[in-house]
Image 1 (cartoon, rainbow, N blue to C red):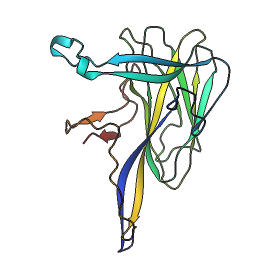
Image 2: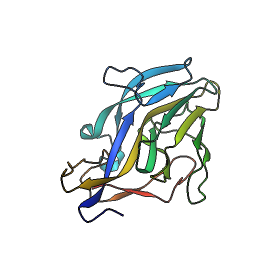
Image 3: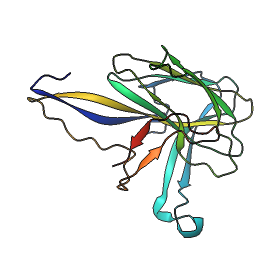
Length: 204
């Protein structure tokens, strides 16, 4: 519990797999080496009337892509992380992926997860996996491609942090990268395999 001159706040950080120069982000990630490539694609949300594409909701998606079986990336959670979410893409040429968290997740949650990003829809950035974390533990997360010649494309991990602020150091507001101004929340993990987690990430 924070002391009388401390307060806690929830903040979000997003660690992209590619840096600003479109290179693999070695500050936060390691990978298996061969079989990975950087990709940039203009992605659009189907938010227009009748399901048409609205230019106002198009954006460039930068991600790491592989179609090599057993190619993987690893990352570690930042201190005080209470939640994690993996963003990636879907597509007709995608396949299965496997995720492992070490040490085991709290509350009896499954630390092994297999699903697929194969979809007849065009690629878009979606939640591929989410989990509640113990903020006192630093976890290692490993994501592996399963099927040879089928793609796994990863954009970023987002972490929800429980930050303790002292009265001497007022916190700066950090806007969640999920913010849309809609005042709604997303039921996360909805991808070909169904809802992965009951955790909801608020969108303010």
